[in-house]
Amino acid sequence: MVSFAAQPSGDTNDHQVSAIPEAPEADAAISEDGTPLAVLTADCLPVVFVAERADTSVPLTAVAHAGRRGLLDGVLQNTVHELRERGAHTITAWVGPAICGSCYEVPENMRAESAQLLPGIETETSWQTPGLDLPGAARALLKELDVQVADTGADHSDWCTLEHDALYSYRRDKTTSRLAGVVWVPSVADSAGKDTP
Image (cartoon, rainbow, N blue to C red; front, side, top):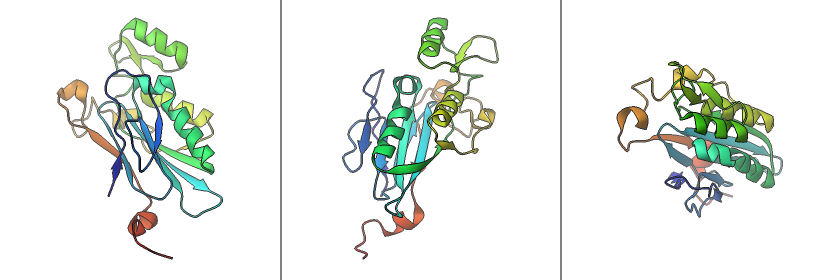
C-alpha cells in the first residue's frame, strides 16, 4: 500500500510536513518505517528523499510537493529539517518532472516577489517574458542544505511537463490529471506489515 500526501489546494501558507500514518493535508510526508509514499503534481515539482540513519538499516523516506508557493514558503527546508530531526545523516533527493524555467511564465511582479524570497528562481521564458525556474531553484536550494541531489532530471528540458506530451501538464492540458512522485525502499516495502523478527 502506498500512502499519498494530501496536498493543500489553493494558495495557502500552511506548507507543513506530516509523519505517516497520520497524513493530514500537507505538502510533504515522511515515513520512518519504509511505508511507500507518493505525492501528486501537475506542473509543480515532485521531490522524493531517501535518508540514511546511523541507528538503523531502515532509511527514512519523504515526498514533497514543491509548487511555487510551497518552494518559496520553505517546504523543502522543512522536509530536510524534519528528516534530520529524525536522525538522518545523509540525504539524497530526486527532483522529478515539472514545468521548466523556459516555459513557466509569470507576471513580472510575481517574478520580482519570488526572487526576493528565493534569489536565483527568476528567469526568462524562451519567448522573453518573465518566468520562474522551479527545478533549478529547488536543486540549488537542496545543495545549499547539504543534500545530495541525484543527476536524474538535471537537464530540465528533458523533464519539462509543458513541452513533453508524455508528461502531464495542467497548463497545457487544462484537466485534473496528475503525475505521481513515489518513493519506497524495496527490501523494507516487501516486508512492511509482516511480523518479522
